[in-house]
Amino acid sequence: MRYCFLALILIVSCKPQQAEKEVENYPVLETMGYYQRFSQKLWLAGQNQNWELADFYTHELEEVTERLVEGNVIHDDYNISNLSEAMLLPKIEKVEEAIRKKDQVLFLENYELMISSCNLCHNATKHNFIKILVPNDSKIWNQDFTSK
Ligand code: HEC
View 1 (cartoon, rainbow, N blue to C red):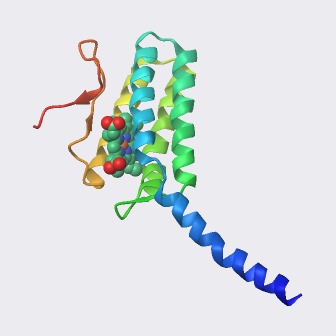
View 2 (view 1 turned 90 degrees about the vertical axis):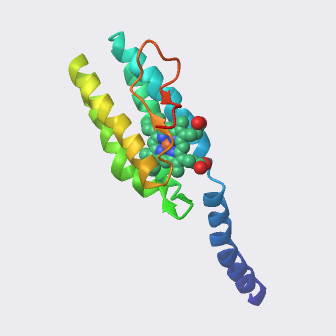
């Protein structure tokens, strides 16, 4: 019985350490890669008024964000999870609303707001050199690589 009790203490005291390790290793950069890819494809789907495809990419963005929020991720002292929940998630939902209405003008407006929230968070986390753009046909990537 005493050993059981000791084992229980051991399990309880091991668990939080394990959880912390997982948070430390959370693939923030991978998440950002998904964000960039899905947001670019989302814009292209919207340009083509392909609402079914646009809805798919919006859901992917939402899922990636929800996973990040649940991960309680601290990155360079910034709570990336809380920031994403407060800044990005509501903007993704706004894009979703425009897709439901099949309203291209509203879609573009809300898409721009969503991209602003990406950049606002880059500024807030001292990554202001990562500048995401609303794509246009002349650019392959939705990122500004200039130093201005
Ligand atoms: C909660 C804050 C936050 C939000 C919201 C956010 N980012 Fe990031 N992003 C970061 C941080 C922090 C890094 C740097 C990660 C690192 O240093 O490993 C980063 C890095 C990046 C990179 C560089 C990595 C690469 O693959 O080139 C890209 C691109 C990027 N983000 C795209 C986006 C896009 C697109 C969105 C919006 C859909 C977005 N981010 C939203 C915080 C955020």
